[in-house]
Amino acid sequence: MNSTFTTILRILLGLGLLVFGLNKFIGFMPIPEFPEDAGNFMESLKATGYVLPIVGFFEIFIGLLLLIKKWVPFALLLLAPITVNIVLFHLFLDLPEIWGAIVVTVINVILIYKYWKVYRPLFQY
Image (cartoon, rainbow, N blue to C red; front, side, top):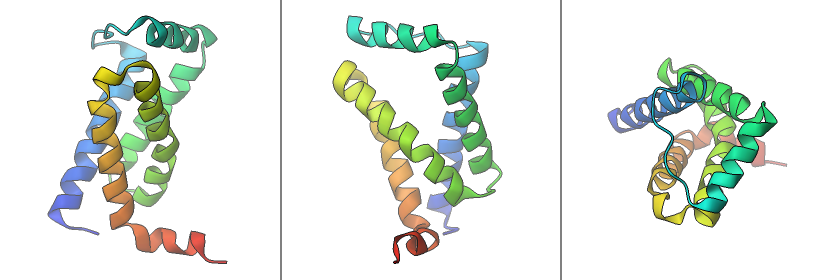
């Protein structure tokens, strides 16, 4: 679980989540141009007033947990539904930009696999 490869992936994923989570609050990166349907969806999420801040909070929280190597298996489980939603958003609304979602998914899957011993008891009955 503590290989150099795993450490690099954990830090890259943590930094990415921290940056994109902070961007939801501070807005230091430009908002990309989305296709019409994707743009309408993002505007709807923004209009709720709570969805994007909650997602941003969780991205920051998970990113920090990964960076300080605290509760990594828990952080990866929290990230799983966010990852699924990122993939589905791009799959259905913004397919040309799905590469980032694929990278996050692959890193998350590799790290979950590396920590599988921790998750095994969840699947015993």
